[in-house]
Length: 425
Ligand code: KE4
Image (cartoon, rainbow, N blue to C red; front, side, top):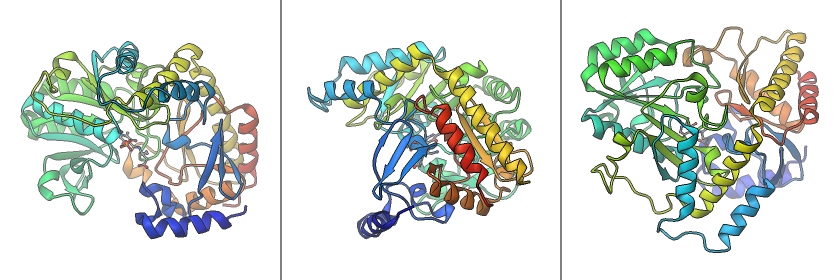
C-alpha cells in the first residue's frame, strides 16, 4: 500500500490542527498507525490520496447507510443548495424531516433539530433537568454521549459512584451530578435510585451500546430501566444517535418495544451532513423555548442542506426497507470472519445486531465496559493494520462499531472474508 502522500498530508495537518485531526479517534493512535487522507468515496469504497481503495466498514461512524455519494441524496442536496444554503429562518423541509421522525418513532411527538449528537444530548439532559427540577443523571460506564462536560465522567472507585471528570477542563462540580453504573447491571441502577431516587432527573443510555464496541442489552434490561424511571418519576433518555434508522426504520426502541421519554438522534438522519435532534413527548418537548422556559438555540440548527440530505436518506430507507438484507449480509460477513479466525485458533467474540457489529479479541462474552476492556487491543491494532493493507477499512479502535451499507454486496463481503483468511495475528 502506497503511503507517501498520506504521510506528508498528516505532517502538514499536524502543523495547524491539534493532533492533525478534527476528532481524536481519526488519528489512528489506538491502532498504532498514521491516518490515511481521503480524496473521495463512492458506494462502499473510500479512496485515499495515495490512490489506495478500501471497502469501508466505518461509514463515517454510521451515517452512510446508503453508501458514499448516493446519487439521489446528492441530487436532492444540489437542488436545495442551488436555492441558497442557510437562512436562519424556518423552512418547510425542517417540518418534513420532523414529520418523518415523528411517524417512525411511537415515543416522539415533537423534534428539535441541532447540529450534532453532542448538542442533542446536551439539550435532552437540560430538558430532563428542567422538566423534573432535579440535578442528577445516571449514565453507564463505557457509554459515550458526545463531549458534553457532564458526560465526560468515569467511574471512581467501586462499581457505582459519583462521576469524576474523565478529561481535564471538566470541573469536578460539573461531574458530581453524574452517577455511573455498569451497562446491563440492573442491581447497580436500583442501588443508585435507592440512594438518590428523588434527585435523579434522568437515565441516559445507548439502548444498543456502540461506544465500548457493540454491546447488546441483556433480556429485560431496558424494561427494568424503564420501570425504575417510572417508579422514581425520572426521565428515560435513549441515546439513539448511532442506532436511529440503523437497525430498523425507527430506533432500537422500535426493535425492543420500549418507549423512552426522550430520544437523541443523529448521524443517519443527516445523510452525511452535520445534524442532531432530540425528540419526545409533547409534554416535555413543549418546555423548550420559545414556548417553554428551557433555553436551547443554534445558528445552523435544521439547516436546509443537511435536512435535504436527511429527508433523501430516510425516504430511501422507508421505501426500500433494506434492513433484512443488511442483517443477512452482515451475518454472512461475521460468520465468515469467525470461521477464518477459529481456523487460526484466535480467541474472539463478535457482538452483532443487524448491520452493526464489533469483533472483540477476547475469549469472554462482552456485556459491559469491564469485559470489553479485557480485550487484546494490541491484537486489534494488528488486525486493523493488516486489513487496511489488504484494502479493508475498519473502525480505528477496538471500542467502536462496524457498519454495512446498502452499497455493500456479496462480492465485497467475500473479499473481506478472504482478507481475514490471510491474517497473521
Ligand atoms: P457527535 O457530537 O459526534 O455528532 O455525536 C456524539 C454522540 C452521541 N451519542 C452517541 C451514541 C455517539 O456514538 C456519538 C458520537 N459517536 C462517535 C463514534 N462512536 C463519533 C466519532 C468521533 O467522535 O469522531
